[in-house]
Amino acid sequence: MSEVGQKHRAEKKVRQIPLLAIHEPVVSGKKPSWIRARMPVGAEIDRVKKLLRKNRLVTVCEEASCPNLGECFNGGTATFMIMGDICTRRCSFCDVGFGRPRPLDKHEPAHLAQAIAELKLNYVVITSVDRDDLEDGGASHFASCITAVRASCPGIEIEILVPDFKNREQAAIHLLADAPPDYFNHNLETVPRLYKRVRPGAVYQGSLELLEKYKTLKAEVMTKSGLMLGLGETLDEVKAVMRDMRDHKVDMVTLGQYLQPSRAHHPVVRYVEPGEFEELAVYAKALGFSRVASGPMVRSSYHADEQAHGHKPVK
Image (tube, rainbow, N blue to C red; front, side):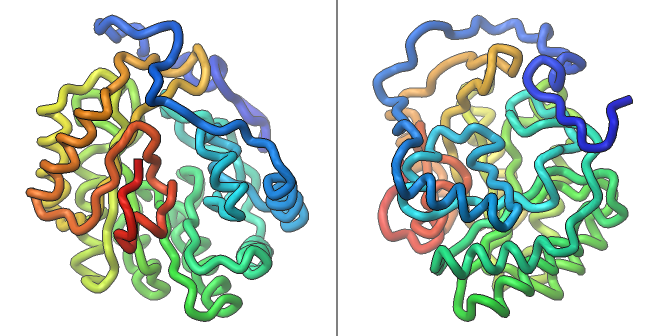
C-alpha cells in the first residue's frame, strides 16, 4: 500500500485499469491541424505560478496537463484545485496523480481567497480531486472555500466543478446548498459504455442524479456538465448522453477533444473533426441547453466565464 502523500502517475497510476479491452484502432503520429495549444511561457505565467506557490495552492491546469495552460495563465486566470494534488481514483484519461492523500489543509480556504483577490478575478472555477477517504467526500471543504472567497471578493461569480461524492451525494448536496456557487458543474466525461475503462469507480446514473438533485434543491443555480470525445464513443452515443443531461435538468454543456496525457493513459481512438463538433453544438442547442461550448480545444473550465455568459463561441 502506498504511503500517505505518495503520488502515482502515468503507468503506475493506470496499470490496473483494463485498457487492453480496447478493440478499436487507435490513432498515432502527428496531431491534426485543428489541435493547437500555446507553449506555456511568459512573464504572466511566472507571476501566476509564484502566486500559487506562495499560497500553497494547486491548479488543475498544471496537474492535469491542460493544453490551454499557457493561454489561461497569460490571461491571469487559473482553475483552482482544492484538497491537494493526490486523487483517490485511477481514471485512465486523467493526468492527476493517484494515491493516499494528505489531510486537508484547514488554511486552504483563506489562501484560496487571498490568491483570487490578488488576481482580481471576477469569475473563478474551483475544482478538486476525488476524496473518497473523507466522510463527506470533501463537500464541507468546498463550502468553506466558497464562503471564504465570497467574503474576500464581493460580487465574484463562482463555478464549482465537483466530484461525484460517491455514496455521500445527499449530504454533499445539502452542504453545498447552504453555501451555493453560481454554477454547479459535474462532468460525465464519456458515454456509459466506456465507464469501466475510462472512469472506473464512477457510476453514470449516479452522476446524472447528482446534477438533477442539486438543481431541484437550488433551482437558481445553473448546472453544467461535459464530455470528452475521441475515446471510442459514437456520435449517436454522445447525443444520447446529452438527452440524458437535459432529462436531468442540466443547463450547460461542454464538448471537447480528448488528448492523451501519456502513452500509459487511454489512447486517442480518433480525432473528431471541427464539423462534427459544430453538428453536436446545433443538436445541443435544439435540445434546449442554455449554453453550449463545442470544439476540439474546449475544456470544461476553459473560458468558463464566456461559457457562462454566452459572450462568444468557445472553440
